[in-house]
Image (tube, rainbow, N blue to C red; front, side):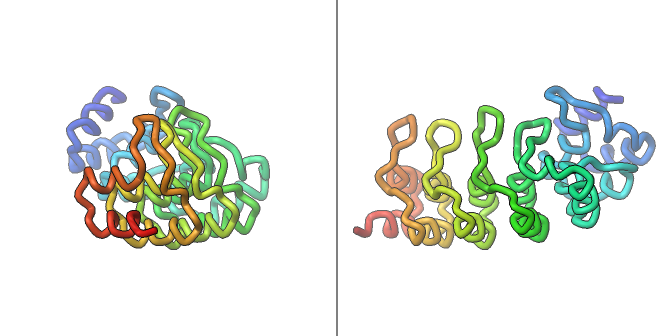
Length: 216
């Protein structure tokens, strides 16, 4: 069953995934390599139809799974019982608020902030992604702004020295670049490869971003 689940994820066959989950909902609770559940692994694959169905079939959720599924009331109930989860790390190393940002769970992200979550904590894995990086990856300008107002260092690096500005420039997300510059992101910073955000934008032909980053 586990092998079949992995094969269907690899082939991105949503219909057969849904059939498998319907027949064996317990497959969602199986632990994958690294300790994450099959449910969490499915969430990262971006197969929204299969993931939405999985949410309806799963019998129980841990704190991190509840965040991915957008179950705010359940998150609240879990956190009330165990406050230490607020700035903890999921099995894959990401913080709760970074997960909320990555999965565009805005209400949960803002709620976590109100509970005292620190969006600047880097992931406890090689990616070193914090909540700001996750918001930039999803081009969620509103969440990114909230995290910056909460005190996240706009120039904090993730893996390979990539800052939020490098990431936004690479993606060509104009409004995100404007936001980061408003919070005084350092345009001169270089990734480990030696590239600045401007050079990233030039390489990827994001002309409007190039103009923004070229302006003195």
